[in-house]
Amino acid sequence: MVNRRSALNYLNARQEIVKIGDEFSCLPNIYRVFVSNYELGDETKLFRSLKVKTDSKPEPVTIRWENSKKANPWNIEGDRLLGITTLEDMKYEIEEYDQRIEPWHQSGMIKIGRTHGDAVLLGVESGKEDRIYLYGESSDHGEFFEIASDIFSLFSKIELVPDTELLDFYKVTLSELVLTWGEDFWRVREGKLT
Image 1 (tube, rainbow, N blue to C red):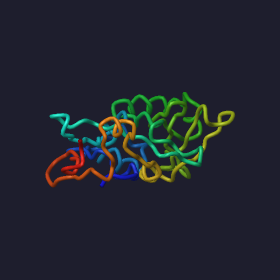
Image 2 (cartoon, one colour; image 1 turned 90 degrees about the vertical axis):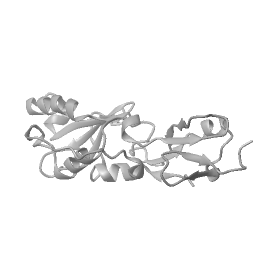
Image 3 (spheres, rainbow, N blue to C red; image 1 turned 45 degrees about the horizontal axis):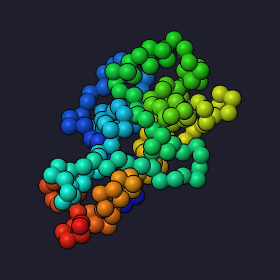
Image 4 (tube, helix red, strand yellow; image 1 turned 30 degrees about the vertical axis):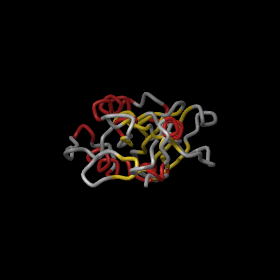
């Protein structure tokens, strides 16, 4: 059965581990492990999709992930996390960091992602290594807010649930979904769909 789960459980693992070159030497160890092992980019690249095969469609349909509501406004909401910076784009961010262009660079951080209104930052200097911060519309007067001790902790705080409106459209409930060994999509339990 599909239910609310930590986004950490739905990260897309890379097909092959990526070797991180010297141009990324400023990246802290935990973040290096993350970028070496998991896909980067927008949310469609970051998370494995929930594919559901119904009797009414010959091919599985993809159900978008949503985030359950958070009480703490400084936690990133799953549907607000637009992406994690790719290694190619990270090269440019590191060049800017070396020149201390942005306010976060001057505070020992680099931008690793974005939400609808905030930059997601990674601490790279001593005392801030691997820590994750938000900076932007949510922050007051240019302050940085620490939201996680490292990238894995960040994804463990994000809870994903399937888009219930789309499930309703296909007349499917979470309790009706089953995953068959060897398939990459969920099926509706037989006899449940009209």
